[in-house]
Each structure stands twice: as C-alpha cells, then as structure tokens.
Amino acid sequence: MFINPYALDPNNSSILYFSGGSGGNNGGIWRNNDIKNCTETIGWTYLTTSTEDDQVSAIGISKNNNANVVYYGSSNGDVYRIDDAHTGTSPTRTNLTLPEFAGRYVSSIAVDPDSSKNVIITFSNYNVERVYYSSNSGVNWQSVGGNLNSANAPSARWAQIFTVSGVRHYFLATSTGVYYTINLNGGSTTWTQEAVGSIGNVVTTMLDFRQSDNLLIAATHGRGAWSSNTGFPLPVELTSFNYEVFGNNVTLKWITSEERNNQGFEIERKKTTSNSWEQRGFVAGAGTTNEIRNYTYSDLNIESGKYNYRLKQIDYNGNFKYYNLDNEVIIGIPGKFILSQNYPNPFNPVTRISFELPKEGLVKLEVFDVTGRFIKTLVNENKLAGFYEVEFNGGNLASGVYFYKISVDNFTDMKKMILIK
Image (tube, rainbow, N blue to C red; front, side):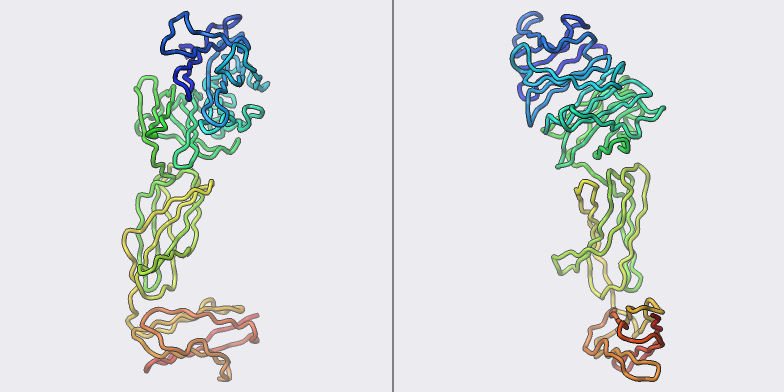
C-alpha cells in the first residue's frame, strides 16, 4: 500500500486506529477515541505495546463475539493481536507470527464480523502460501490458498468475510481480479473468479461490504470501482429446466452455467392436487465451477395423472434452494391394453411387471409354473385407466420358468419369466 492503513471501529465510528511511523519508537498502532473532533496532534494515543520495527501494513478489527480486538500485520510478515484495544495505552498484545511468515508482506487482515476468532490474512508476495485462516483468534493458522498457491497464481491484495442468508462468504482481491469461496478446505480450497466479464483480470486492490443492503464494492487499479448486490446469492445459476414425456416415463433436463459449492440435486415430485412432496432421486453436482453443466433424471413407470416437479439444490454446508419446473407434467391414458415383459428378466428373487389399461376394468394378474399350476395372484381388483406396475417376489420358489397372465375386459395376455437362484 502507498498509504498507512487505518480502520474505524465497526461498533463505534468515533474510534479510529491508524498505523503511524515507519518503525522504531513511533512505529505501531495509534488510536483516536474522538475522530470527529480531532486534529493532527490532538486526541491521539499511541499503543505502546504495539511497537513495530517494520511498517504496519494491515489492520483488522472485530465486531461481534468479543469486540475491540485489533489484528495487525507488518511489511516483514509479523502478525499480532491486541485485546481490549479501545482503552488504555498498553493493552495486551499477542504474537501470532508463524516462522514461515518471515519476509512476507501482510497485505490484508479480514476479521469475521460475526466472530473475532475467525480471521484471514493475505500476503501479496508471489510464489508463497498466500492466504491463511484461523478459527481460534490466531493461535493456529491453516493455509487456505488452495488453487491460488500455484507458481502462476495471482498476488493476494485484500480479503473480506461476510455472511448473507446464513452462508459465510470469503472474497479476495488479487492482481488478476476478484475470487471467492464459501467453503474453506485447507490446501484443497477452490477459489472461483468472480465478475470475469466486468472486472476481469485487472488488479483489484480493496474490497468492502455493507451489511445493511448486502452491497459488495471492489476497487481496481485502472478500471474504477465496481459494486454487486449479494443479497440473494445463487449457489447455482440454472439457465434451463424442462422435461419430456415418453409414455408413463418422465425425463427431466436442466442446465447450469455456474455452481458454487454444489453437492447436488434432490428430485422431488407431487401430484398437483397434493401438498406433499416426495423425493424421487438424487443427482450429484459439480462442486464449484464456471463451466456449463447438463443434467438429466428419468422418473419411470408413473401412474396417469398431473404432476409437479422441483429440484432441491443442496450445498456442502447443508444449505439448499428450490427450483420449480414451470409447467405441470401430464401422464395420459394408454391407447390400448398392454402387458409388458417383466424387468429384470431373468431375476433373483424380485422382479417388476407393468401393464397399461386404456379404460377402467376388473384386472386379474396371476402367476403359474411351467406345468400350469397356479402360484400366486398379484392383482384382483377394479382399476381405473392408466399405467401400473406390481412387484413379484419369488423368494420361496425354485429356479425355473414361470408365466404371468393378465385378464381384463376381453383382453388376455401371458408372458414368460425366468427365476435363477
């Protein structure tokens, strides 16, 4: 940075922390508890425990869950925490520096506004671990640079932590644009570039977030400032969701253009006359990607009627969002009587038998052995026109050839099935 960093207390706008001096006796953190009425010489208190031989290059301040905690870092990789920094001249300072931080430039410190324990520090150096995270006030650090730690990865200039709709977001401003993730996973963390078509790969120097209206601001070097409303974060950008009907089978098709931390999709269905949804299946997602993804799911052997479908998109943190199919799906009435071949066939010991009725009638579906001896009645009742499927379990039968026969109205048909144990 070309200016000494400073930061307002997020809980008290009258308190400002400023990194004064370039090292030595006046290097460190200065505080002003009445910034609105101060002058260049009046109102400033030097925190004597913050003495730093190198330039203070970054400051971060807590808001909730233990307020008045100030984190700061230096141009030589030193990282410290000051507790109760809002009062007195000698608050307690704790050294949080790891040996591998030596010689690196601390470019930013982001404190989770919901908890002073959660902190991100970034280093603007190349060819080093660039991003570290602590969930215990800096006692332990974990590298979370992930895919931004490669040799050709960008320099990390700024970090921001905020929560929207219960989902914690982590953003980075870098030498090649803005990156984000909602899932810190150590060295496997995946940072995805944001605003590729607008900010692009330009150097981005700072970020700021306004909780009142969920507005995120990114400041660039040479391309101005950009804003984005993050009030309704879409874990998945769904570009289409449609269906096809083949007899009494429905194939759902959907396309995504972007996915964030996407575990997958539960497929849910209900009759249009019902308020109760049932899960029909699950399709795995692509995690985090900016590539176009095509998905399909087939819902088979559905009774005649009108249905609604929806996708329940779930991320790896357990958050979810529903996407509804716009149109109702109609499974019509068959054009003729049909008895289908059982599936699977051969089977052991369970198989399924489907049949279609173009009109209402008394249906009898029976099973016989190869000698014609009656084995079991599967259906013997009046049924409306539609598509049907029944299960046959041959667990108590010997291996061999069996027949199943349907009789309804003036229609009769018989098919062979093979039980192999």
